[in-house]
Amino acid sequence: QVQLVESGGGLVPAGGSLRLSCAASGRTSGSYAMGWFRQPPGKEREFVAAISSSGTITKYADSVKGQFTISRDNAKNTVYLQMNSLKPEDTAVYYCALRWAAWISGTGEYEYDRWGQGTQVTVSS
Image (cartoon, rainbow, N blue to C red):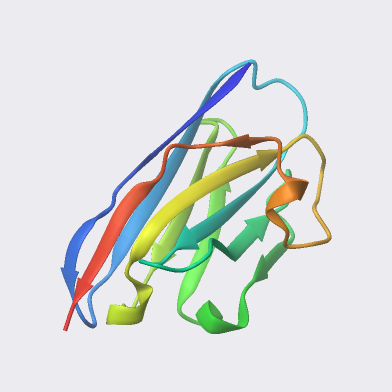
């Protein structure tokens, strides 16, 4: 089994930055793509970004393009989400997810095999 643990969330003023981390542990051998999702208060969980197993392909939701950057360090089995120019509407619980594949073409939650427990990001106005 693979476990995913997110960290780096917190309270930040509007315009600030945060970097989320997602560390994978356990049976991590093999290729796996990773994604970030978020669930704003009272809303459905939504896709944020994804990265291929090699780190060479990335995809973003339109709402975060140019604002967020996903990256990974395979030596550390860790994926990052750098979030800049944060806005109050970015407030959400952020989840990382894993798919046992080199890449994920879609953005649906059902495409992922494992999920982290989430980390809260709150952006104050």
